Image 1 (cartoon, each protein chain N blue to C red):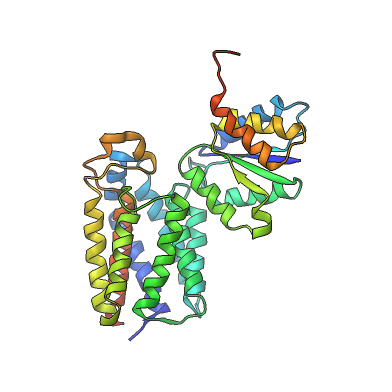
Image 2: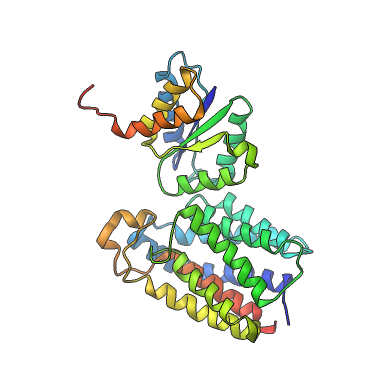
Amino acid sequence: MIGVLVASHSEEAASGIAKIAKEMSGQGNVPVVGVGGNESGGLGLSVPKVYRALMALLERCDGVLIVPDIGSSVLASRAAVDMLTPEVMDKVAIANAPILEGAMLAAIESFIGSDLAAVLDAAKEAKNLDKSER
Amino acid sequence: MSFTVEMARDALRKMNAAVESKKEYLTELDSAIGDADHGTNMSRGMNRSIEKIDSKTYEDFGGLFRDVAMTIMSAVGGSAGPLYGTFFMKMGQKLSGKKEASVSDMADAMNEGLVGIMTLGKSQPGDKTMVDALSPAVAALRENAAGGHSAAWAKAARAAEAGMKNTIPMLAKRGRSSYLGERSIGHQDPGATSSYYMINCFKDAAKGA
């Protein structure tokens, strides 16, 4: 199963969004984890924090999709992925997607048993999610 | 003469002092177009790095720069963490095993760092980022490699300073400032400013090389 790592400037936002995505993805079986905040508890995201969360998820998943918010969260996610060995790196992708909608659609796609590429596509589609129509 | 591991450590100590004395100014620049954390972030990152490297002995540049890279990445939650962290990490990888470096060695290592930053941030010269100070500095080191450290670093520092000032009229294309669009014009980029300080500190440390 593909895990989803929600990476935000804020620890509260990350865990809240992870919780929503997990509950929306059927039975809450999909590993969805939030990581956020800097080492002193303020806003930001440090590379080792992402790396540790990523490694922990990889231990119980076939792959991991990282869904970051913006700016430095994206850079910290990329830098954490750069630290992985090439074989492991292939099991990880970073989604260019709105963080909540992306994490939720990714978790749903993972729940139906899709691979990393399909989970990534589902997250990317999140930017087209029309809230006025549903 | 060569640039030594001890000179590199001295450059980093000088960078810590420079960032500390310009902390308010960096934050002021960042509050105009960013999220006002660059001064605090650079200060925390460099402070922790110096604490780390002061307590150890280093056989080569690799170990020194790797420690600084890991410390900055841990200590800094803003973009400066992954960006400066990657810069020092790539420098360390390029200079791994070396105890002394020629001007070309340092130019090659800084170029690796620069490419690392550009890859991570998907940035180019002209985007109003630290690349605009670093890129001309690396080019100046390369062009003046034959003249020895002192002269080459002096040229590099001047090039970095000019590059930093050139960011003022630029329209930001990366980072939070890019969301400001036209309003980013007329402000000096904080990342280019701290990058200039870094190059200037390497210049000061290279005086005896």
